[in-house]
Length: 309
Image 1 (spheres, rainbow, N blue to C red):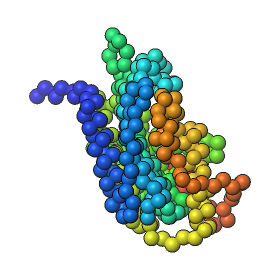
Image 2 (image 1 turned 120 degrees about the vertical axis):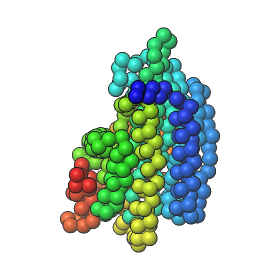
Image 3 (image 1 turned 135 degrees about the horizontal axis):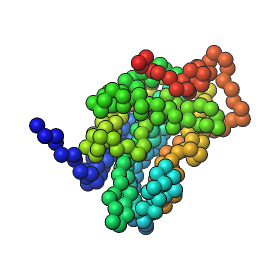
Image 4 (image 1 turned 90 degrees about the horizontal axis):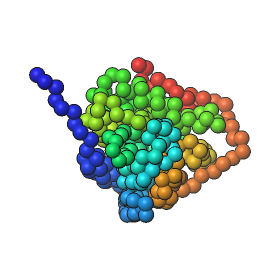
């Protein structure tokens, strides 16, 4: 039997899935919150393209939840993209994706981030170059091993159909990427991350990214339900706001997606929707030895094999 022909790149199919993913995630988060709904903000970009930003604020569960879809294009790849692929410098681009960040109210419910994206670099008289990227990670403020294990089991299950080596590779890439290098700590307990991904051709790459995006709510919402009713006071809230400061630091100093959005002339409000609504910085704050806060830093904010594989 002759092999099946490779599926050709299909930007329209990717766009359709991304728009549907945004809708499904927003519906699931509204149901989980129970008291607030997303407002919808349609925007256009003068240089080409636009998107839909959906924001939920001041809910029972989420202090802020932002879920954005964007499809932008331009005559030249931004430096944040071409630096990783210098042979593509000077090409035009078309980029689309869904990106979300959820900042819960209760300090015992983790913050989380998802991004799935597709980019095509083009120029006259040359074949287009395409790739996928993205993944998700979890940023707890308090250490619960069962939450981290569930998160990584879900991540592994999303990767298994693509091969046994995919989860370890994407986990390591996530551990290596979401690091605050100036503080020597990871942003959280990791998850999955890939960039410049085209392995196996368009069909296989798209299937992997779909599996990652579609697994997000089943990975996150069970953790939410376990922790959302945990009582907390001002001390726990203060710790949450201080740790949110680390999130801001990463996004503004290290995150390639934020840089791509700003350098490509994207909509600033939509790019910075990932920022928490409240945050604190305290000078040289060190948690008490043996406290849950100290355990978070000592045991959770470093690369770790959560599945014992």
